[in-house]
Length: 225
Length: 215
Image (cartoon, rainbow over all chains, first blue to last red; front, side, top):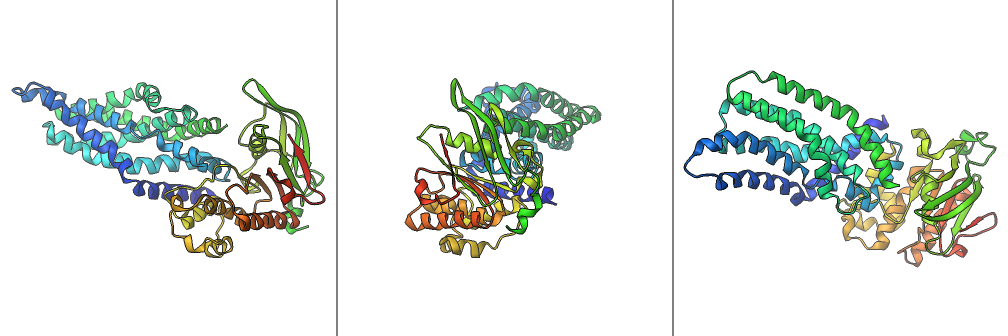
């Protein structure tokens, strides 16, 4: 009983907080669109086939980079106002609290990105047939990414300006997501079977969601010492 | 003794909180070593010492947030850092940080706190007692420091914790606030609760039977 009520309490609190700080929510999305929109400007204007060929990679790389923005704040806000101490001392299992926080962050940060990405893909002339795969691949890749970045945020809790360190820590670990996600989208664009990379993304998501919160919880305990 | 006292009685011959041979280092600097004390239900401990003596570190160690360099802290014979969830609710810690979310209202903060501990609260009655009922739907960032402190301490009253660990609870409070909080601590102890309070004004709280810990 306390487990599910603690999960609900943390999830609804974090969602409420996110909606009261709109700008923090919107920044990564705007960044995503702007980065993707810069590529066409930097390429040769007479050859639009170039755009199509790099489109998939651009969408994935910008999605990855934008989801690193603001992740620093995931636990830092709670650490600075003392709520993290209270979360650690509460009878609720810390792993559950961590899952709730990651879930809240995924809902407000990744879901809009997943919805927006196909539109950006269209701008790069990504075939309509590849859109469902792009959507599915992002849906499977973003939970893993959220767990990884939460781990980075928890590990760097004691570091003063952790923004770039989280990137250095998380980006290498996130490369499988980039490889499989872009590969699945690419296969779909050429009308081939995409099950392989999508299954691998799903397997990574299961691994991250089941093992990740335990690691994040351990990192947080060390972080508040 | 209250009903709650009997639950865990016998666990540790009446001394619920035991601190044994505690030693804490901060970097290269030893804050204290060989610290021993025990608290029984109905007992108040006051922690005094100059700034930087390690009062906050000691309180965080007793709460189980910081591991000691050596020695042990136990609550009803169990190490405080590996308590079962139901025992965890016995201990409440309120430090310098108020643990309130700036963007949530007073009421939302109090209710979140209660939900996290799995209890339900009559928020209105509680806030009325605190004298901040008229501010209950105001976001915490618009409150004064003293009102924040009152909100942070409010949840102590409803959590049902047996051991209160308070780090300078009177900071930012006005005269009425001092009286209110001192009254709560006395009442809590009179009802068989335990409290450790770090303070620079021990005379406000001390009475017969109070354990003084000087760092």
